[in-house]
Structure formats: structure tokens, C-alpha cells
Length: 514
Ligand code: XMP
Image 1 (cartoon, rainbow, N blue to C red):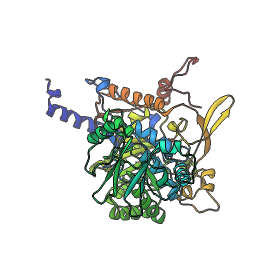
Image 2 (cartoon, protein in one colour; image 1 turned 90 degrees about the vertical axis):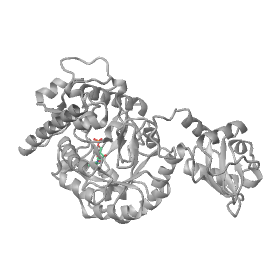
Image 3 (cartoon, rainbow, N blue to C red; image 1 turned 180 degrees about the vertical axis):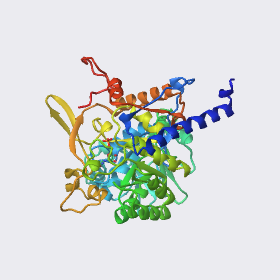
Image 4 (spheres, rainbow, N blue to C red; image 1 turned 120 degrees about the vertical axis):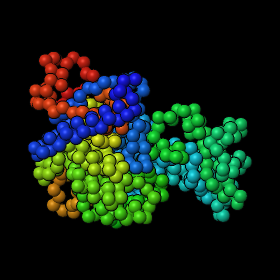
């Protein structure tokens, strides 16, 4: 073992690298300059780790982990339940936007939370006198994908279960649940574990097993397919909470909007809420943050900010995570119409430096164009990246499809665009504006269709891991610590992209910028 490979040698080396990077950014900062993605590249370092052993687990907030450091943006053309489900299955997390009413937003969260379950603590129950038609209408309205519903009497005691078979063989939807349900139900006591529940279901060939307490009341539910998936390890890469449910976050505003939403979101077991504003270093955000932290046991991420003093204020107010980015986004016009903002890589570095002292993770929000921007954001100090544009063209985004000159696109718009603000209170509040005389801070447009999220994320993660390999970082924390930057010129940037070639075949991870 050489001196540098010994534990004390390694930590000395890390300290030296941290100091070197601090020196790079302070030299730039002292000249009054701030840098963004296209201004820098990471330098290569000695690598002793194999790509397969690279670990990219990270944190979105103090108590919410990530298996991959990618978050889908709280935008109405990026993240609704379908995107949130898929990205959580890939190890990241989605943030449900707030252009929904509080009820609609909570219903979207419920869809994610009910999608995959270890133990369902509060299964959907219907009174035994409800008609089959009413139950089917409710299932359709809430867009639940499952078919097993527990049936209870007026004293909330379990009397039966409605299964897919019961629905399929029922020809008269005016019949009451008690006339159609399966009455002989195999139940278990509330303390039963995942493995035992699996054994009981398998032995009895049952797709669901309700848990019932001594008073005969429903205390939970296991379903066969989900338990099987968890036990077989198929869900190892999923980002799940302690009960095996997919993780999901949601955006909220300030004051009453926030309180109304949080109340409903917490009921649906939201993992984290984000006070999502264009100017996070404000009285409204700080007061709202303090009130939520006082009354609810939920992680709160606050943003957006780009200055270290703002990071300090939000950390002191109790933020569990910070979101960095004022105007870097592909659809943002804030920097142009208001003249404010700080190029993103410097903003990430400066804010994360302060947040680290409080143990608060930071998320780099907006402005990423290529997978190579992910290791750059993390190398500058971010724990995760939030993407709008880079995910808006996937199958799972809610944006509409458009055809333009024979090419398939999906609609992508800023939350501060005219269209989003005209039609939604959530958008107007993000930019602190009333209904009349709107001053937009974003654009409406479209992005090329990219296909399923899974394939897109595969390329992004591939790029991140390649970057970590070149730097010599085995973990996200390593990358945050040892990454070194070099500033590049316009010529360096041109050299970085393909040049002097007519591209004849598109690569899945490189599209020429328009
Ligand atoms: P990307 O670059 O991934 O950026 O498309 C997404 C992020 O941009 C922010 N956002 C906006 N910022 N005006 C802005 O100034 C807008 O209309 C707007 N809409 C979204 C937001 O933080 C998002 O995550």
C-alpha cells in the first residue's frame, strides 16, 4: 500500500482535492465571474474502481434517499403519476406539479403510492351496501389499476372481498357489494410479515390477504403480485419507502395554498413536499417552511435559490433539502426578462458549500442538456439533478404529441409561460403574479419524442457512470468531494462536440442542439 492509498493518505488527498476545487471557484468568483455547464469540464483522475462497482445512490433530502440521482421536474408537461411511477421504478423520484387542484394533486400521489405495495396500511374499503356500479365508477374516477376491494359493514368490520372474478362474473351492476362479494376470506393478524403473508397467499391460492384486528376491523392488506415482486428482488432498483411503496414528491406554494395541499398530501403518505417558487429566499417561503416543519412530520425541500446567503437562511429555517437554479432552464426567460440569476455550476457550488455545513442535500434544478452535465452538477456539489427538458420527450411525460415536418415531438412549456399562467393558479403563484397583466417568465414549445423513459434514463446513468469512472469516483459522495474542474473556451466547447463530420447516424445519447 502506498502512502496515498492508506486511509490517512486518502483523506489527506481528499482534503487537498477539496481545497484545489475551492481555489478554482474562489479565483473565478473573485473576478466576479460565474460559470455554467458549457463553461467547464471535469478533469480525469486516477481510477481504481471498475464501472460495475460504481454506486450512484444519493439523497434528495435529509430523509429521502435516491437509488439514482435523477428527479423529474414539477412541471405540467413533465411529471404526473405515470412519470412519477416510472421514475421511482428506475430509482429516482418524480415531483407532481401544482397546476392541479389540491384534491387532484393528492389523487395523483395516491396513484403512485398505491401502484406497488408491501403492506397497504389503509386499503380501499367499501360499505357492503354500495352497488357494484358505484364501486366501478369510483375505481375508474381514481384510475386505480387494481381489482381487490375490501367490503365492510356499518361498524367497519370486514365482511368480504370483491375480486376481479367477482367483477367479471357480475352482470347486474345494481347489485350490492354484499350480494356479489366473496364471503370466505382468508385473513391474518396485523403483525404478519411479508414472507409469512406470501406463504399464506400461495398456500391458499389467494391474490390478497386482508389483515384484521381482534375487533374484526381492517388493519391492512397484502397483495400477491406486489409481495412476490418485492421478495423476488425484481424491485431492488425501485426507490421505495419503508413500507415498500414507490417514493413520490409534490410541489406546493406558500401559506394557505401550501397548508391546504400538505394536509391532503400527508394523508396520502407523500415522501416529501417542495415549496416550489421562483424566488425561494423570501419571507413567504421561510414562514411557510417553519410552519410546516412545526406541524407535520414530512421532509420539506425549499427553493429555488442561487446565492449562498439564501442557502444559509433556508437551512436555518429548517429546510431538509434545497433546490438550486434561477433561470438556467431550457424554457426559462427569467434571466432575460428580469435580468437576474447566476450561471448554474457556480450557483450549485456556492449553495452546496453552505448547505453541507448543515447536512442539507441540494438538488441542481434545470439547464442540463446532455448526460455529461450530470457528473458536472454533482461534481460541483449537487446530490441530485432535476430535469424538465431532458425528460419531457419521453413516453411517460403528460405532454401532448405533435407532428412537425414528419418528426414526432412532445409539447413542453415553462410553468411561467403565458399558457401555463393564464390557465393555472399554481403557475401564477410560483411567479408571485395575479390573474391580470401577466408578465411571463417562460416559453412554450416542443421537444423531440425520445421513447420510453427507461431507455432514456439508461443513457443518462451510463453517462454519469462513465464520468465517475474518468474522475475516479466510486460514489456520489466521492464525486462531490474529489471532482476537479477546468474552464473551457468557445474553441474548447466546439472541440468537445462532434465536428468536421456529416453525422449519418444519430446516437441515442447525443442530439445536435438546434
Ligand atoms: P430544464 O432545463 O430541465 O429546466 O428544462 C427545468 C426547470 O426550469 C424551471 N422552470 C422555469 N423557470 N420560467 C423559469 O424561469 C419558467 O417558465 C419555468 N418553468 C420551469 C423549473 O425549476 C424546472 O424544474
